[in-house]
Length: 240
Image (cartoon, rainbow, N blue to C red; front, side):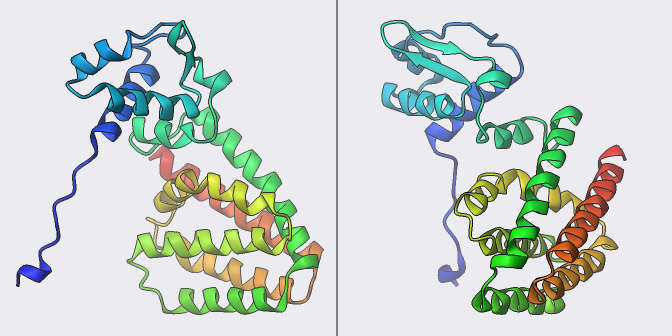
């Protein structure tokens, strides 16, 4: 019986500090250009050690939220100018899973450009091994429980990532990976509507057929229709 009891997991002190700093900056309570107190003072205020504060600041600096300037200190950035892709996950968490409407539209437009290009290149460059992987994903979709939203979300991401892998471009799958938290957050909301699941799986089958035939025009067309379908349904869900 005891073997079935899993250990209780809590956030690390660093994670708690990171979240606190992000909330203060994204809410505007720490304004752009504001110089933070010294790390030793921050450690006292947060009730943690100085190394924990330093590690947290290094991580939010990597996201572009702050700049750590030698002999000056840590200064709050305008994340809209300095922020990296990594900050998108923080923005989603801060807004309880939602995105600012303008940022959402920007992400959807970028995704349309990137994934249509992926579809075109994949039709030309996909390998026989990758086609077997596509068919394995289709098999998973046929067998998955439609109530298991988390698994469906993962399968959907795997499908699009495999399209990126099939382009034979090293940067495209890595770029898609960098958007994974944002991508799965949006698609997780999308798949809450049970009606869209068979529709998406149907698009995937159509895409695999086009890729197998190495039909670039058809692959781009399917990807375009699939993304338009997703955008329209996602906007409907968000507006409710």
